[in-house]
Length: 191
Image 1 (cartoon, one colour):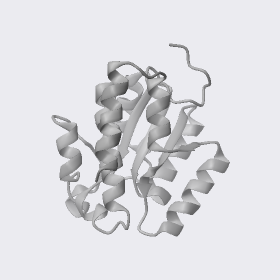
Image 2 (tube, rainbow, N blue to C red):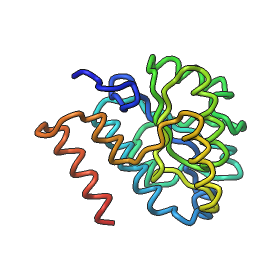
Image 3 (tube, rainbow, N blue to C red):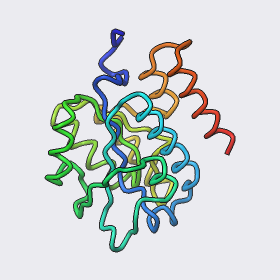
Image 4 (cartoon, rainbow, N blue to C red):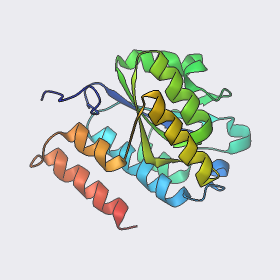
């Protein structure tokens, strides 16, 4: 399958990065349930489509573990523990990302105006094509999230939605993968 545009998500060139979706942090998010359900859907779809998934945890001693729903979707998966806000500034993260040999990063998680923004801007500077999934990121206040997404959009990040990303990486309907991803979308929407 040929990618139509470098700004469309491409399963062969993309890695899904899940940032800091943790118990104590998620507990104070006004859109917690929506963001977690969308994150789980994207993780399951990425795994189904053979896309690499990287997961971070910010200061787990204080912010807790990855939320249970996401841990279940990830299965055997070791998160990258960090203390820096910008994931790219963490050597372990940077090494694992480089090892994927992918040129696109699909970013989701918490918080939009802190770790997501800093990571997206740094990766953009490094030459990655960055997609931030608006319905799979959040902040403690909607205003912070809105400002972050607008800032990222102006910087050249592709601010998109979960369904847009899924249908871009699928590229076509009528396949078994399409049917499986469609089932994940319907499952999320039924919540």
